[in-house]
Length: 199
Image (tube, rainbow, N blue to C red):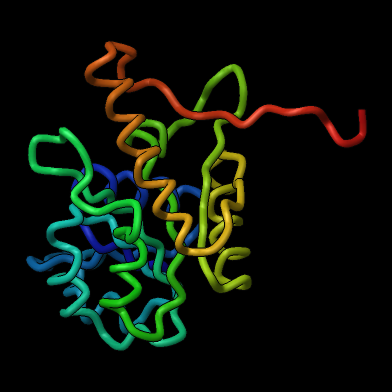
């Protein structure tokens, strides 16, 4: 079972996309209703993988309502954007990913899904397969998250330990800058190209 914390565009899109891949998904919400939307505590208690898809400013409060996350995989999708999106409020010597790990003791945190638009999470169709970078300190958790990334038709790229979230979050800021300020639009994603090893 995968619990999605956050019912905005990213959370709702990931829930629908992962369900379409055959995963059992439950939405965790502060205003639960219906069979597929539970309280945050209920959703996290029955799930082995938790996806944090809230705005960063809400993350700590949401995690405080979660059941014990010890040993569970916690996928952090947040970006610590300033309110006006002019920059990041965390960076260089810390990251949202590392802060999330501090707010969820014992969870196996993996940072990913933060550097692409919600539209691409549903349908990443480009001339080249888009890359999805991820990082974390727990190898089995990273392996499991890489499998989810493949299910969503991205190429998973291991960026290293969780402290590499300090690099992935500015990448989210770059995506926003290119899409919004540089006029490239939201139908963009990053790709990692190189010489084939078998060439």
